[in-house]
Image (cartoon, rainbow, N blue to C red; front, side, top):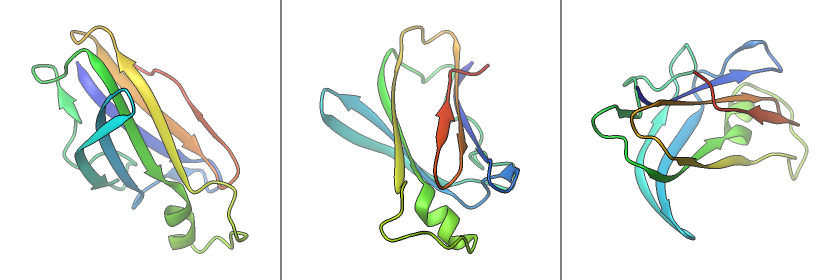
Length: 117
């Protein structure tokens, strides 16, 4: 239960270790930074859950993934301007008693997400 994320680099077929991520709570257009972190070797938050079951609340959230910074650090020759810079995912939590997993599958040119388990 709670909120988690996981990022897979589909260009290299690996977890996106080293990618910078920021988590925000949102109310309308206003966003408040909750935490920022660097993904570990498994492409996950090194501290585990972003929110545990006791602290996850019904509401809206935003995850921002620094895609361009990650691929540049991996030595990928990106065009200027690059196609993807940051991927921002806005999502809602309607049932705080359930687990919300927000995975990101990403390359320099595309991304996909879904509500995982």
